[in-house]
Length: 98
Image (tube, rainbow, N blue to C red):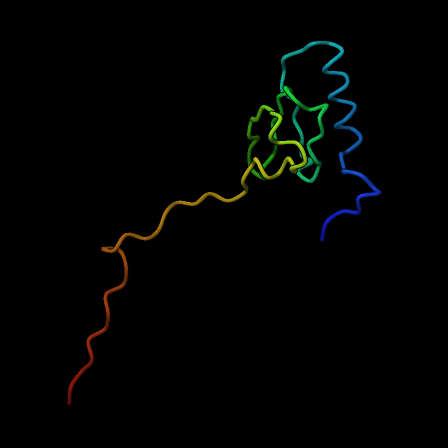
């Protein structure tokens, strides 16, 4: 279910403080965050974030196309290793005829 429009987008308060502090100091260090459910707002454009995926931090730079999406969308939590090759699949059982 989507969030009510009258509430506005959710952004963790500490994340907003970090972004404002980053803009004041003109630092180029990425902002580490565990807040995957925070929505990307226009103030985040050009900022570098490191988003935790449960195991490690994934670096991203926010662009204009990302506004309105959640931070967690850009740090996948699962790694797809591919489908099982044909030679590794189980061989079909041969039926005994009596």
